[in-house]
Length: 119
Length: 108
Image (cartoon, rainbow over the protein chains, first blue to last red):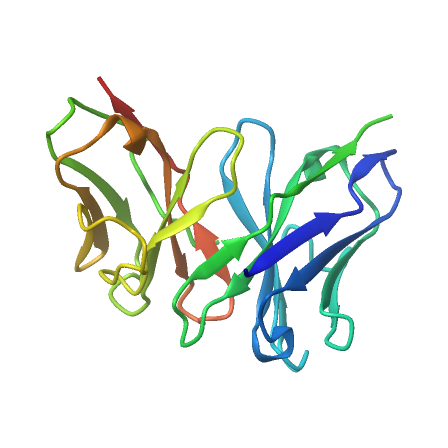
């Protein structure tokens, strides 16, 4: 079964840092691009960042560029999101999602991990 | 920055057809994708590349594209289809993904 499991969320103060992880199983992780998408409480989906299978291509939303860093370890079947200089508006559930082949959409998604930025 | 525009809400009675639109300037050049999200759950892909349906998604879900607007159509709506629906596409550079604001489908 293809599965993505996020971890690392929690409560952090403004200006603080947090590192999210996404453990992948049930598929050849090193063959797929991966993504982070977030959803603020009661709000819609917001794409955060994407990384290609070999980490050659990395993209960020303007709202997080310069503060967040996406990375992956194909040997560990894991995706990461290092979040620095966190702001209240970064409070959200963070999902990791796999890119289907040939730009066929994000599927599956993990269950999400909640990040709360508050003093 | 690039935006995709969806109606905030759509309401239909069971058995009727629901249509949810998504508008964006780059849609003639970029594929659109649709996701269903039920409360407390992660999104699920229901349409990709404008009109393709992933395996396991019921045939009542279909997608279409015309100019700067794409449409998700749910024929014979069932109570279980009540959810938030999001469109997704890429900006003109193809490097940044964008989601629409979401549409809440209510089954009356």
